Amino acid sequence: MGLETGATSPWLYHSLVSSGLPAVLMDARHAHAALSMRPSKSDRSDARGLAEILCMGWYREVTAKSFSSHERLARLATRRRLVAIRADLDAQLRGLLKTFGLILGPGNTDALVRRAETLAEGQPVISGLVTRLAEVRRHVVTQVAALDRDIRRLVRSEPTLKRFMTVPGVGPITAVAFLSTIDEPTRFKHARDVGPDLGLTPRGPNPPRLAPDHIEKRSEPALQIARRVNDIRHRHLPLTSQPAGGVLTAPLKMPR
Image (cartoon, rainbow, N blue to C red; front, top):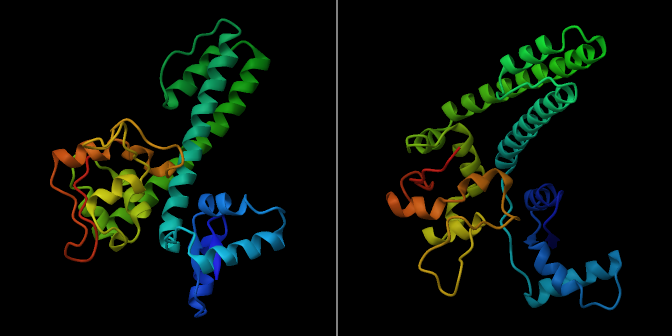
């Protein structure tokens, strides 16, 4: 059975495999390129096209991540969204006050909110708006802190994550993002295959190494922090694919 990669493909793939049915997860971009040559576009036509692609082998198989990896990535995505909301609220406070000649200044802590509340005193309408924004921001900060505690507990419970954090510059977020994206290290035959899988692409004809500042936009959002993985890998011990315990030993110093 052939499936395209998509939002529900992990659940469908693991459900089929757990039921004892053979399943293949195909790269959606490759499948789309093959299906675009068909004369008609419909669900029935696409299903037949996927079956023909599977029979002829015109596809690139994709590894389905485990549900535990998806859970870790979902936790990071939730945290990233809350941090973005906090930044948006800070910008909203600055823009709101600046219209009335009140400059909030730099900062991203609760001191910024207290300063905004102080500046808005004496203006009932603006003060009410600032109070509401400040209340929402404080609640968002509380939830971010709760997620940070969850991530730290996860790191303490995973020996592999603790090993990653022995690398200088690697914190809990980077360690969890790297482990969740790699998921199953045995799918990499060589260490040099890890960089392209993270979205790093070579620049120029036959470059000696991957360009550290060039990463594809379709790469995992959580692994955008691994943009300089190739340069860092050359400055540390080589990345091995089958160390003791069957996990990647990742001597990577990735910026947080």
